[in-house]
Length: 233
Image (cartoon, rainbow, N blue to C red; front, side, top):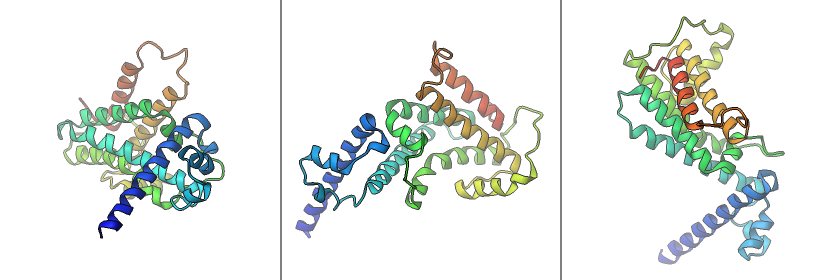
């Protein structure tokens, strides 16, 4: 048992080292340029040895993607837990800030998760639960605010088209959102706009436009999106 435990520790450490080197490759080569052979060279391993840990480049990409989604999810969960439960607008702003702060600190990992698809790579189902961690927190905030009767959206707002009712039902099922269609579509819009705003900042779309205080712009935008959902400070 002790020997097996020692082997497991060695394996875990090698996997950690492989993924750390792969993250550095993301910064220099991009996800499409990720190479198991290059990782093996940097580690001083023969290329065949690394395949015992990651049988293909796609397996390594999947591990990096799951790690990234889990890191975003953990940041969002901590931000939510650190805000009073009945301060729904404060919780919304805190988790939005957590996404932005993580993205700015890990731009290449964010690009892997939310940037252009990697040619030839199809994310497996194993990534789904990790990818949903942050969204489940957003859904919980909206669900709890709705249950508390605390939603008061800016309006009047047009109702969602009946043709997307099935889509909205899938959204609710995916992230355990307890809210009617009109709330669901506003929450989905705000969630998409959050990541759009972060991506614009990270990928340079705000150059020569939003320059003086991007943090203040972000907070104001997220507050506006919260009001769209119905979250009042």
